[in-house]
Length: 189
Image 1 (cartoon, rainbow, N blue to C red):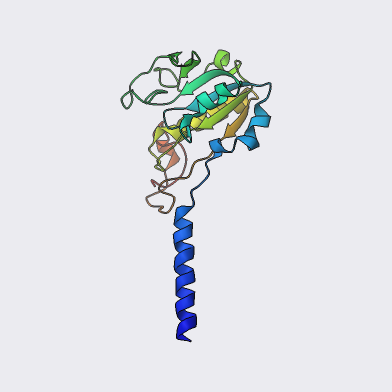
Image 2: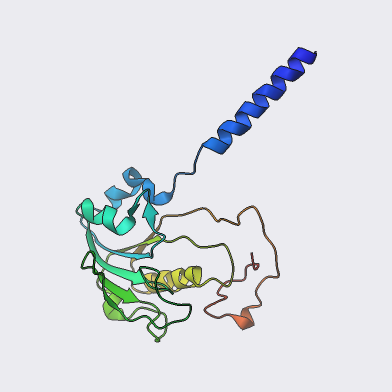
């Protein structure tokens, strides 16, 4: 009986060690699943410096594979992540790739213009959030999704795990306080 118990403990221990070695495969790394959807489409991305597919940014990955990326929607802190919190970020052109950057933090409504929305067929969202209600990335994504619904544009969310997914805490947002730092009726964490 002791040998069975010892064997059981060794097997459980090895399974736990193996589980810790396996890594999560992120949505942007599953190119065989979404590349076929993108063929022949004008693509916009909503991303920033966190949109890494392995050791490459999603933008670079798409351009290397000859996809027609026509615009980048940038969140708070800008596309390259170099703007301060709440800072107005002007629209520009990405110096590395030449793709136009359409800022959602240019001091206007945080919602893209009709002209911006007519530039693309599909929006790809690839951005790492921190799992907190008062973070602005998910609010920006929600506003973009609303605009895509209004202009009949498709949205592809390349999901990333919530780094705080093991922990949920705090009061649910009272929607009378809805703002750019509290968009949905969810807990703080």
